[in-house]
Picture 1 (cartoon, rainbow, N blue to C red):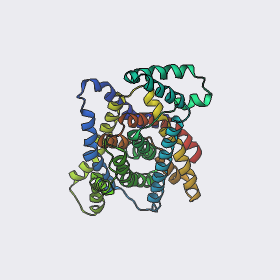
Picture 2 (picture 1 turned 60 degrees about the vertical axis):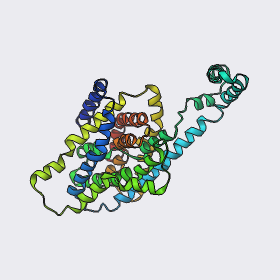
Picture 3 (picture 1 turned 180 degrees about the vertical axis):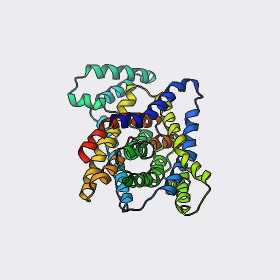
Picture 4 (picture 1 turned 180 degrees about the horizontal axis):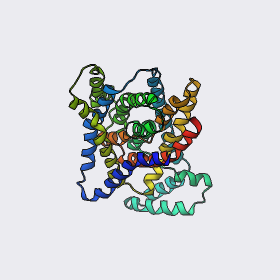
Length: 358
């Protein structure tokens, strides 16, 4: 197990570390350029290859339904958690500050911002606080762009890069089709359909709420066209060199994704970034796979098929969340923080899944 994890995470550690170290010498626009290159070229390349060369036969008909149910439940869980945290953070814990701020504004209008800050700090220190109020003050608050990154982190898992790179060492080749079909369905329906809708709605300075703008964004997603092209050309023969080129995505897309994550991690804001990332990571690594475990067990899944589905649902927060955050102007820091924290947490969860489900 230790050797397997070491082999799986060595590229991750190397490329992420390189991204962090090289950020100070690279142009500031390079992370966004790299993210857009992955969005328009890298990920479509991967999906085309998987759609064309993966054997999807052998009783995996329920996988799209399970994957879609997992995605929708992840959205509901993440959205309700973000809204709930915002409401708790804004209730009684902020009431004394609001009163003090109002008084400062009325007494000295010209000095309102300065007085507000000073009175807020003094009031926070002087007012007696219960344990519950202290907990409320410590809760993170998520604005609109952060809520979009929160939902994407809680919904989407890194099934393509980490999942398909790790599971071949944990399950037999004949059961890998469950994992591959889960990854394809998530990328096609989750990341680049539902995920684009979520990112379009929450992203940007003026969120696009009109339904035709959201539909247009989905129809223009290159990964959807790449899947159709790969799937419907499965029976068409191509030269050997073209096959090698199509399947060579692994050697470019995965390092580029890890490198991008390292660059964004180098821009993190310390403890605040980690604090905001904890809630979606707990949802993604613990609650969501736990619900999937119960669901697929009730459907009659056992052994490696169940293990594959549960592990794919509990993969770290997807790099696609960071790519979508770059493309649709969501909170990049939160996206990178959830990826880093959940990737570390995966090391703890894998032995647990193997002991319980294998």
